Image (tube, rainbow, N blue to C red):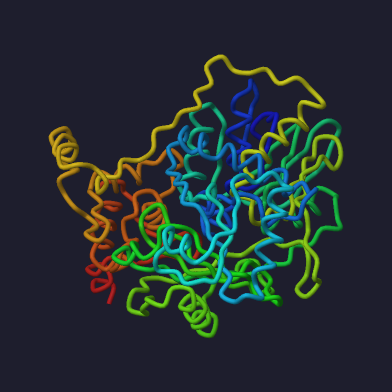
Length: 486
């Protein structure tokens, strides 16, 4: 037991980290627990990174309200915590005349929700916005955008730390004991006592809810698979492009998404699965992604694919139900705030969800703002994006900027060391990757991994080097040690 916390948050995804950051504005003892070895390891780090404008969501729902409000706040939030945001716009394209009514429906829904600037455009305007896309008509959303979900979540977590919140990684919640005015939260790292328990466990939110005595929720995992294209073809796409989704689809259809770093993503698919941790890729789906994406962007080539991945949506409705579920953000009983079914547009809605949680707390007690709260966190240096003069200046200050570790992404030794020195204490290869982009390029680590391993071992003393989290050890020992043991 490590004293009494005022607020304990379960889950280090974008929503949990956003809530931790908002609570760190106040005079309170805040703790966030994450079962993985880093933040953004679940749904928050395995999505398209799209900042949705709000026209897909059914009107008069909490999801629509939080989407619209979150969309307004994301640009400022990203600027504050050092995460890149780009307003790209979005095209929802109709390839056939009989798909046009769907575009009209989307525009009407978006206007009712409060989405700004929606209009339906023809072939000529489509070509002006996105020359490589062929369509009969399209719904154009000028306010849609993209963000790096890793940098946003990491930035929120680090800014919360700067303002005295605590974050404990590798700490899984195993039980909850409600008491008189507090909760005893049992974990793999001990027991923590808190006045408020905030469930942001994502794919595991139904389990944490049940631990706290609130049954009746069930998460239905729905996997979405993606391809990532080489940056050398990034110029093929400058805006988000979505199709009119198939009627039997569980999602929005396979779409084309530019990233803030210049890659293009194809996906996601939508397939209900049994296990919440099954993030494999499947040959049939990977082929289907290519076929469907090629219909919108015929110049796609298989040789431009550099990686595939998948993410899982925490749906509250089963496959084939024909229903949509709203976000659950409520205080179930005194002190227990439950967030369940936070799927897309959860990334966009995160700041609005955090404010709603603050309002729930303010309904019970007064929150005293800190006088010294600092909302600003400086983002990582991106050496590859700097001018020659700026690069020379950095090298003059620190020779580590003059040694390239990752050729594909032009990542320097200093950037890798900065990633290893992160305030959260994450030390895996994946932690380095998502912080400085080393190994995200064409060769996917073929050149830089040995050097990164060397830096982890020699500079940071990391001996048990992991690719990601538990069960992902990369080595069994040193070569000389193995020979000696024989």
